[in-house]
Length: 114
Image (cartoon, rainbow, N blue to C red; front, side, top):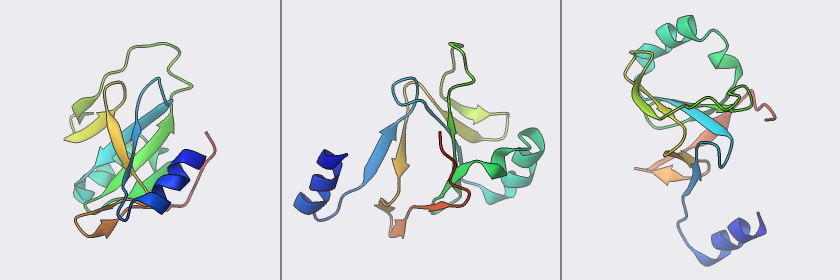
């Protein structure tokens, strides 16, 4: 953590990304089309209660992988047939307070402990 904080002192414009998957324990659902949110909530009723990041086009919903129990999960571009991305092994995710295309990513409540 100290190393990351030092980067902010050295570099003027710094964006962060987190590797998803077993190495970090992070699973992310990336929704870029807000019209899909209602259908996602139907298929994953608890999705709105998890930690989420506001992006320029939508949300990143963040989960830990403690319930996966060694099952193989791969990143997918059409998760649940909703044209949303599932990021796990082999993926990464832009993290707050990164700024992309003039928009600063930020966390929205609830912020849950993993």
